[in-house]
Image 1: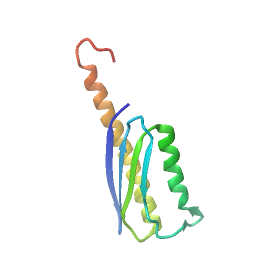
Image 2: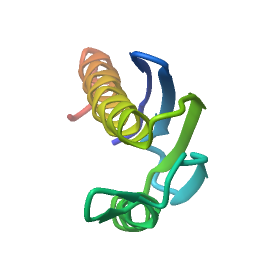
Image 3: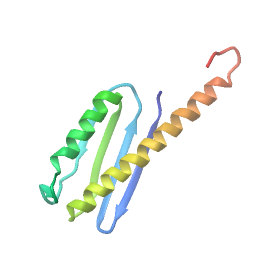
Length: 109
């Protein structure tokens, strides 16, 4: 599957952007300067660990950027929501590309 997607998600003062390439090559650029080290009992370092594990096993390239934010909870929420939307966008693009290639004569899908 190949395709790419992106999303910007705001929440109050926070704004995050996620771009994904379903390329078959793992790569992560993670730039999220969390305002605090903990959100309740959640260690914010686990967010990076989650995305690193995801790219390694899904074989995707992922850019995660928190562009603005002073509240760590808002930063985390916008990052994860932008990730979900970018993944959905990339998957849709891959499906459209696959369907388009199936319309070519003499090709098997």
